[in-house]
Image (tube, rainbow, N blue to C red; front, side, top):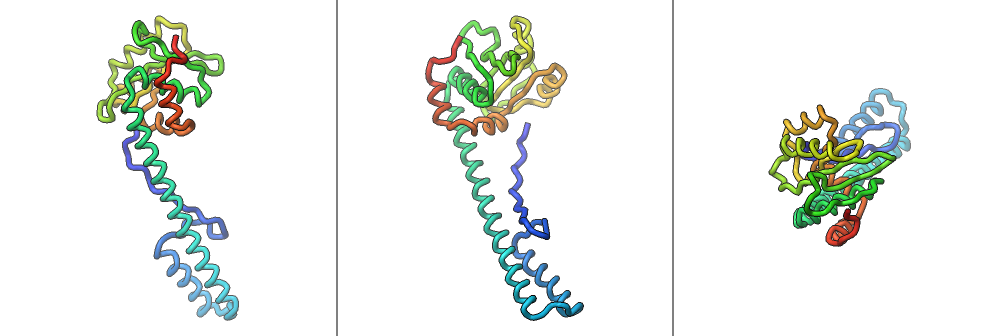
Length: 218
């Protein structure tokens, strides 16, 4: 489960320094370094000093522009994730199952969604690289954690299917007890953060459109 605030992106400036130049601290620091070398060692000519100052200013300006661009891109991606999360939350539970199947397909799985009734705890059958996985999907709200009993239900369904593995997908997060149980029993967990990250590979409009259709069911 990942509820921590995402860190701001770092800007690594290519060049001989190989460290982050950022904000109002970068320019005074480099100018101070130049003054020490210029007045104490005395090996720089006036022309070399001017070139060095221009170089420092250029690197500092580039660093600021690059940092701000990355920050805008980062904020834009977070906005897209929030929008995608709200769109998926508005789907019915059965539509959400089909949306998850579309997301898995974009990552190399061949998926079949089971019917609304009689699925015996298995919502999706997913295949990849010759292996079959039983997948259970729960469209819980963000604050409603998936607990151990839901995972036990999936493990029980595994006994009725010829499969190589189990996967549990939710639009929420997993409790610590559920996470521990999954680790002990080989259940692959996919929480809200990972699901939204995987969904970036397909336009959300396409996912929603296919989720409301009738294709891919068994």
